[in-house]
Length: 391
Image (tube, rainbow, N blue to C red; front, side):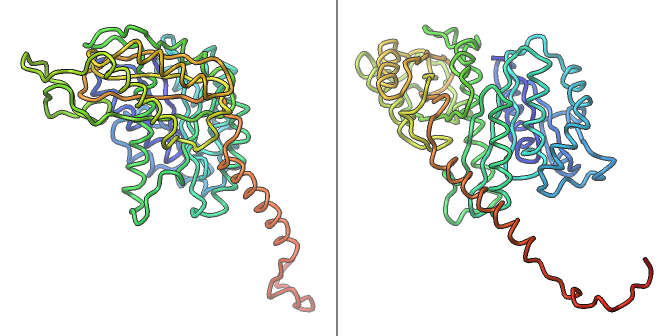
């Protein structure tokens, strides 16, 4: 797929910056990306997105200092300056794009407020599908962030063609510093979606036996709503390797004649089926009841010698038996790596406890805000007899 990423807000900008970094190291360039923000310092902290592709909005109102977690203001600023964002996207070229992907943290102000507005306008102007990747804040980040996320998500699912969710609370580790936690979580996001959106490209390893191209991904996601992604990677090095980091976070393969013996026959099939099971039953980007998914896509990525048609077919059948729908697409994506990875997209989820919890928190927060306004008291309420200096 050829993807145009728009990173909205601080979290979205950082993640798209990592996608562009990954794309620079790939044999085939597939990603294009810009960052949009109301805070100048967030844009200056990016490393891989070119300066001309970093858009500061709301400068006359906010002076480049951000919206301060006020996503209503974030939405208004974006609506006011949507023309400048669209013009920047147009100037970077969209004729060969397969999809737009808007990436945003849903707990803050700029990304959670602006991303639904941008999705609405992109869908109005372009024929290509518009997907969102939304990052949910952990509950301990505060009720304001949960309230923002609920308002943003309930709007976003109606504006985007499909919304991938990454739930921070499901991925955090105890005692981890904020900086290392966000770096690790962002890496998890980029690794999963990097493999998914690159499927079908022709690299040095050739074309897959069962190619997953952009139309397969688009048809899987066409039902809208919320989707979750599972991912699992093998730890078995099957060939001699060169010490170089690859797309799957493993080591790239160095082609030598004296390679170790690769797995054959039933071993390959069993390995692929096991990986797909781990991907779907393990830690998903959004913990959910996978049996409620309407559609699914299974992608196996790794060295061409490890790809096994029977294993892919059997794993697709297993996924089909375990989800509500019957549409399960899948295939292989050969690439230079010493590891095999499985990506499972569970599209249009019917039930996710975290989403229900988020909406409940937001409802309670709204009620508490109304109550607090009603019982607000100030120290000067009793000073009615005192004349002011001026009217």
